[in-house]
Length: 215
Image (cartoon, rainbow, N blue to C red; front, side, top):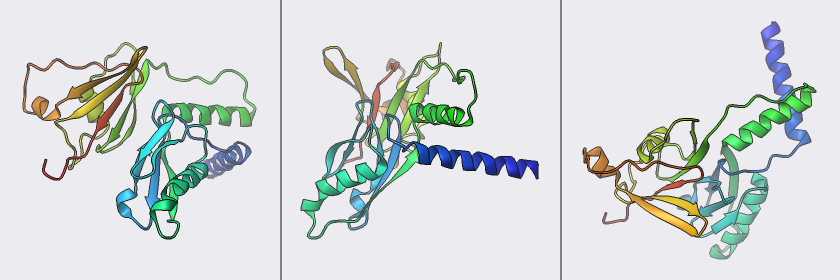
């Protein structure tokens, strides 16, 4: 009985936190976008390190700092001209990134009035995997350990059935712009030992595109 009461109290506390402070999206969060009139436009979208999401037809949209409802309205505004009548667009939070999870935990501590700093795991950084993979989203880099492209793809559920696994990209921001590295997953899977492992750094974005019609 005590366990049930404790669980109920925790649920009510979380509801109170959500009501007191409206949730806004942050890099690493994954949202689910549904367009009722055209299922080809429906997909999961990762909030990238620059705070943007990319969607077909709608293009690039600012998501960081906005609520899912505000992003929904922004997508609707972009798509409206492509339909005779405004489409039915819904945006739902699919999963929290590391930054959002830590902030949600911190909000819970503040709500309960606990003293002391919130203990959080030390992180060396995180990378983002988007596109045709099993679980798009953020992958953490643990302190003192290296993370390769192959390992990050494995943690993201691996390339999907329709992935263009021969032309995976690793996008890395630098002081002079952006570097793009190509990664052929098929060659590695077939045992090509001549390929040097590409070690990822904080903020890298792995893009796994879908295959073309004749690929």
